[in-house]
Image (cartoon, rainbow, N blue to C red):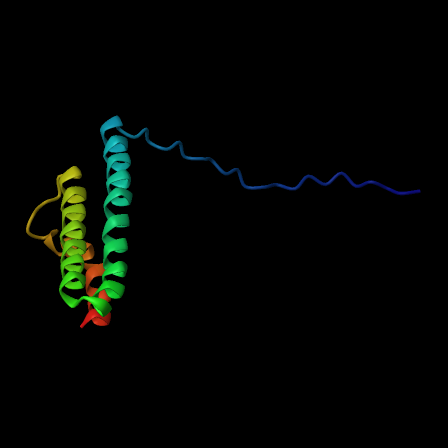
Length: 110
């Protein structure tokens, strides 16, 4: 009835590279920086957004909250750079990332 042809397809053998094991200190730095990012960015973003509504009623208090969000953002970015021991002159531009929520909401306050 049906003739079966014995075809053997040759597939290229793919060899998987075994990943290099990570150093425990590297993993600890990544975990600590992820925790610091979440703990620091939530208050910075919350204060920045909340300062828009407060500034509509009381401008002085709104600007105060807005400045505090910038300080928290800067400290968070500096802490992450310090965890990775990358706090040099060339990495100082990364500190501006901490000011990003403050810069965006500053447009709505002023």
